[in-house]
Image (cartoon, rainbow, N blue to C red; front, side, top):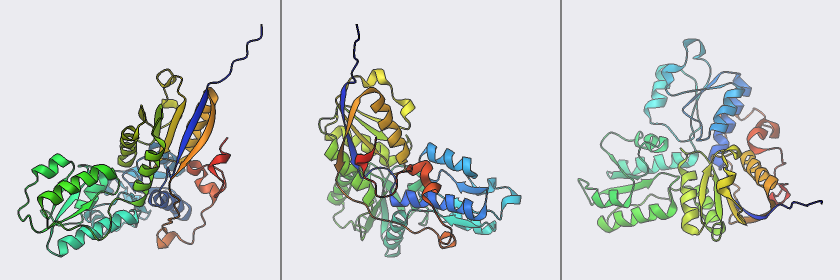
Length: 346
């Protein structure tokens, strides 16, 4: 007897925007272009972005990742060193200059904007309250723009309740760019309740990409049996997307780095899957996960698009004459031509 086995039906709600933001894309391009212009090795201080696939891919091309500048050998001091997208304290470029190193700063322009907002508060005599996660590289970089004792870190509403400044009437706040919009609003509201003269930054510190990805997840998550966020466990914005999905109505939500991490027994026979990716997660891994589900399910893609992103940040002046091709970035972006719609994903 011939028994036909059919795959169970699955609707995949694919979020847009998702994956690389303009700042992450720029940082990776800087390393790729530096390798083309100057040859290997190109040194990178800390992870260029929070994604192992990206780091390992750049290592395969000739990038060398170091934690501190003193790890760069004397014979390679003429090779470029790239600072990560998260930003660095002022002491790092000063250290590079003292060592006569040639450096390329890949700090996201939106992180640099927060640096400027914090420095403006301090220049105007305000004590700076930085809302962010202790130990995150972006927080370390932002605090490192200011003189010691002029900035205080507040993470949670409980921190905001407990915070006791020397001058409650002379405070200005900024935020880490990758926080949960809703959580941060709660922290700011508590600070404003306690300190009515608290001065906001000139523009919102949470970046457009963080906000856009969270809004798309909120749109897609209600009714999902499972919501998968592609991203690294040390990626703040990716972890926030997992939390946002659960709050918005997904029954379960997982942070996944590669399709090989999927536990099919735990996933079970779901009917609706939400899928997004953090701002440092490559599109090729999104494609990989879709392909893995299509092997086991009769999956149809349903788009959950809440915004169109057109931002493009220029790379460093030293690299602008170096051609960057689709093939140069295919290892992270895939080989679909720019502009090909998500509906064409097979």
